Amino acid sequence: MTADDWVPAGTDTSRPSAARVYDYFLGGSHHLDVDRELAGRVEAMTPDIGATMRANREFLRRAVRFLAAQGIRQFLDIGSGIPTSGNVHEIAHAEAPGAAVVYVDVDPVAVEHSRSILAGAERTGVILADVRDTDLVLLGAERTGLIDFRQPVAVLFAGVLHFVADEDDPAGIVGDFRGITAPGSYLLISHATADGQPPEVVEAQKLSSRTGTGIVLRPHAEIASWFEGFPLVEPGLVHIPLWRPSGPVEHPERFGAYAGVGRS
Image 1: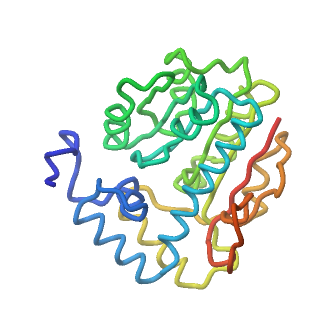
Image 2 (image 1 turned 90 degrees about the horizontal axis):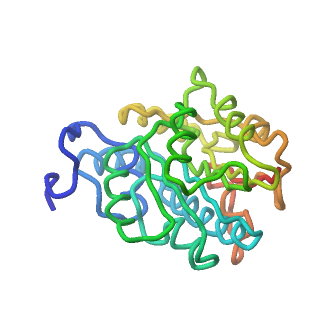
């Protein structure tokens, strides 16, 4: 497969993309040599990185099933990335066929592939927007005709807020979404951390700056504070594989990320 087969015109293919590196670790097919080279360097320093990213995707699937079972019929997936099997709309529709799902991403490759995959899929939409531009995300979501913020909605920040620098105020971003949602809405967050991780994790994190969207590792207390007004459902904010696992989990501390779901 060549870049011209699937990469939108105008994309800088000389620089790795966070979305394409993530796709590589998930076993997808939409990544380039430059992405694989960076992924290899990160993985050499932190062998658990691939397992953590796959655990994040599995957490998202478990959480969407849970949310659908709680009666949620609107899902806003921010920072959705390049589609892989078991996308949010597939999980949601399996549990609740009438559910509406809107994907949001800033990466044009992720958005174009989402549009291709969603062609013909009912009650789904995709918009190109930056998580830091909350007004654009909210307006775009409403314009799809699929999201009504007067009704309960699940806002999903799965593995995206650690790409938001401190100066861009991730707490304020989450607060904007908390403030617009109706009672009974849910907030989902998974986020990378250095808590309990060896020094090489921090060194590997520095490599993420090569994608243009460097990762910021944050502590448990800071991430937990973003759920203000949305009490965490059991088991709280925990290492990713410990959030309502389907089976036993060995050495959860090796997964350098937390995950949690809160309800207003």
